[in-house]
Amino acid sequence: MANVTNRRILLVDDDRGLRHVLSTLLRDAGHQVETAGDGPEALTLLGNQTFDIVLLDIGLPSMSGLDVLAQARDLPKPPLVIMMTADDTSETLLESVRRQAYRYLRKPFPPNTIVDVISDAGAPASALSFEVISARPEWLELVAPCTLEMAERIQSFVMHLDAHLPEDIREAVASAFRELLTNAIEWGGKFDPNRKVRISCVRAKKMLFYRIADPGEGFDIDGLRHAAISNPDGDPIRHLIVREEQGLRPGGFGLAMTRSLVDELIYNEARNEVIFVKYLE
Amino acid sequence: MSAHLRITEERAGDVTILRLDGRFELEDGDLAFRDCVNALLADGRVKIILDFQEVSRIDSAGIGMLVSKFLSARTRGGTMKLLHLTRHSDHLLDITRLDTVFEIFEDEAAAVKSFGTAT
Image (cartoon, rainbow over the protein chains, first blue to last red):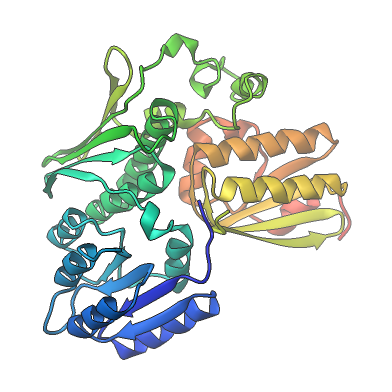
């Protein structure tokens, strides 16, 4: 991921104190910052100047941040738009997803979070879009390019939907989702932005259900000598020797972790699609 | 690279304490951690304590890098011990059985003392 300074940032929030704190923080981090206190002022600035990133509060007076997002995305050179809100309803998040928000931050957040998110963001021209198949609270389904940056974006959306869950379930689901999505885009999609991964997150009353389908050919689970699941009892790091011999990065704990974190882990025959289930009772 | 994992270095005699703060994940904190430990080992500082108290997230790539650098330290006659694991990190080390590989401490003085080093 890139670590970039000197981004042109438009900060839109009706809270003058927050504007001051965040703009000071961002300028100290090496960025150029303009501010606006409402939607019309933001749109005027967006019409007159080019920005890399817009930090956009949703609950603005006179005009919703979601409407500003839609108009910003229609600009000839659309900026990346990071939504900020204290509204914890899933509908607000999903509307942001439909309108291709870059990220979604729920207030309050630690100040450095904003610096990190901006540091991660690529240039607007290289920003990739995802296809929204379904954006209902009970059924979120996206088709997305196979990049780590996209995985980070999608995980942040999905985990906000899970924000009301008990911490232990949220952490388990977040880890499992990250491991399987990373596997899908790394091994199935080869980090190729032209290849797509399909992600479904279904919330039923008594369970969470996630399906990830990657564009690869699948794998033979008996051939996974480079993964921790193949280690003999009593030697939890044997696979790292295999990984070193094969020139693979350190790792290989993902499947072993995921098996223990979720209630069901089911692959299709080719093993290029996986479902995991977490029961809520 | 992203600076999501901030690493602060302290010394207690010949023991180095690395305080990790942030995300320890694929192509993020894992690489910052690798470079930091490689520099320590190249300098002969092979007794290392990792303070996990402020690690917000860790994934399998982070865990993989942790084990890889543990093995590097051990090859050079040293070792790496863990301090202040978060509940989630502790759970992940448990389910990967890595709690049988690493020495894990809750008390910093005890961790330093375990190296047999005068502070």
